[in-house]
Amino acid sequence: MKDVWFFFKKELLESWRTYRFMILAVVFLIFALMSPFIAKLTPEIMKMSFGDSLGIKLPKPTSVDSWTQFYKNIAQIGIFVVAIMFGGTMSQELSRGTLINLVTKGLSRWAVVAAKYLCLVVEWVVVVSSAFFVTWGYTVYFFPDSRSPHVVAGFLPLLLFGLFFLAVILFGSTLARNSYGGLLFTILVMAVLYLVNLFKDAQNYNPVSLIGDNMALVQGTKDLAKLAPGMAIAVVATGCLLGGAVAVLNKKKLA
Amino acid sequence: MTDILTLHHVQKRFGSQQVLQDVDFSIPTGSIFGFVGENGAGKTTTMRLILGLEKIDNGQIEVGDVPVTFGATKTNRITGYLPDVPAFYSYMTPREYLNLCAEITGIPNRAAKITEMLQLVGLPDNKHRIRGFSRGMKQRLGIAQALLNDPQLLICDEPTSALDPAGRNEFLELLASLRGKVTVLFSTHILSDVERISDRVGILHDGRLQACDTLTNLHQQYGQSQIAISFAAPAAAQQCATVLRPTFGDQVTVTETTVTLTYQGDYTAAAQQVLRALVQADLTPTALHKVDPTLEQIFLAVIKK
Image (cartoon, rainbow over all chains, first blue to last red; front, side, top):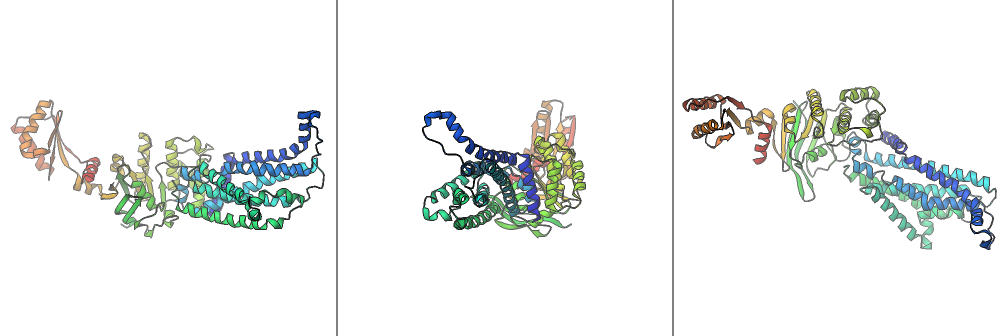
């Protein structure tokens, strides 16, 4: 366990010194600020662009528009930024041979996987939670309505999906020879999950539903318990992916 | 003297290529072992097997009487390793990197040990990151991390190939200074490095250990005893060769003004024969001296075997 802690500290330092964490934090902060602002300004922008020729009366923006924007940004762009930033986390160590010195000093390979995953989770939780709270604050400020009563219930599946998604990234990065290979694996997994989501019966079991039904949860039109199968599958899949990453790394040449 | 490292009939194959065949040798504790072979002979693979970085197909390796296992071998706790191109985390300072290594190895009193190592290899203890290091500086850091846990066995893979002459000299002196305290296994194709500091030499060719002994024994077994006779003019050298050929046959060669002859047995007897022949032929050499066999000659003789 000590090895996990030592390597985890190294991972945190790497994230900080290579600006990986800062870039991610800035991107997510932009999403967080943009979401309520875009919701607030969209009618004004439309009015300025089209003037009276628009012909329809735009509805007054609400907190729902702000949260819709937030989940769209995170699900459509945010997670892929995460995949790009973290795609090389293991493959770069393997291609550069940086693990050789440490493994020959007694560092267990499973500790490498565990520490890397732990660091990814910490970064994810920090950036996505910060973004959530910033959006929440501005949304309450701009839209003091009661149309989004279950804000936390909408956020929890996103948080959990992140844990599953990071396991996919880590497994892909361990499997691949370079960052692009890891990224391709992640994209393929997401594509398969979106295809599975086309079948209505499979939707509640699909981890991708954790980033698809957030607005229904926020508005209270869907119960969090409905997503329980998807959550359970995401947790089990995360365990399998991490176990798989350890098994792959155990067989991998370190350079 | 006990052996710290023993390889028993080790075999390794990559796909259809047999990289190592029945490699069997041991290294006595405290000695410096030079591992020689052409590129691709299997030196690095042997070292990686000793470190548990590759799986052995057949045979067994023991470090300090403990079998090496693939993956996370316990024997690495008493082993230090310097790869041919050591890779580090470029965003760290040397102290930060050595601290990470020390934490993993479980070294007590880390700060003092790291200061000692940085001084030993001549690296400044400042905030400069590894990113800006030259190849030579990285090699020094590599040595520092390899020696950090006071290993009983130090494995260096072609440690001098990337260094300039001054750096090479310093490194060889450092290795030589470890004699008796640390057992060193180092691979190279720079034969003069091996000749300079090794107690024992292993010659690997075509995946087989063709020779493994002390330098003295290898000299006796494979070295050719030679005498070189120099003359002022090429004509005299040619005349000398003609005079010596009835006695020494094909073993006489001429290069410009120098005649080299290979002899068997005692040097004194051979030299007296040569001198008598020269006096009879009224030839006066400018120099006559014994040529000691070099490791290069031995290496070529071994791989031609």
